[in-house]
Length: 134
Image (cartoon, rainbow, N blue to C red; front, side, top):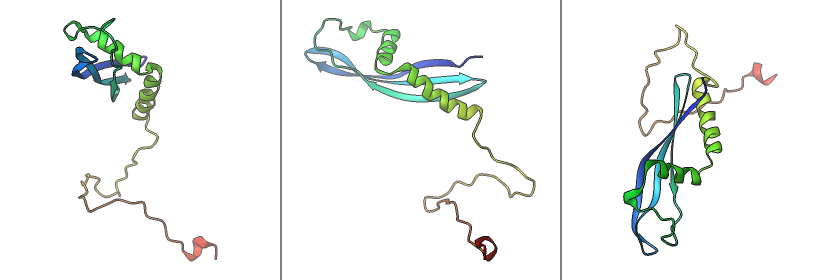
C-alpha cells in the first residue's frame, strides 16, 4: 500500500482590516499526516499568507471554502518537500534505526519520570590497565 497523506486545517486567523479590506485571513495552522503500514506521522505547521494589495481577486471570508484555504497552504508550502520530510519521519516509526533489547536478567524497565533536578547522561567508560595497552 502506498503512503497516504491528509491535510487538515486546524486554525484560521484573520485581521479586522488590511489595506482597507475587512476580515482578511492572515495565518493558517494545519496538520499534515502521512500513513503507511498502519503507522502515522503527524506534522503540524502554519503559514503566513500574503496581504492583499487590492480587492481584485479577494475572496470575502463568508465565501471561503476549506478547499480554497488548503490551496493557499499548498501555495506557501512545497508539498513535495513536505511529503519527503514526513516520509523520513514515518520510516523511522515503521523501521526504527534501533530498538531496545530485552533480557530476563535486565532490571524492571518500568519508566521512571525524572524530576527536574535529575538528568540522564552517557557515562564514559574509565580506562583500565588492560584497555590502555600497558
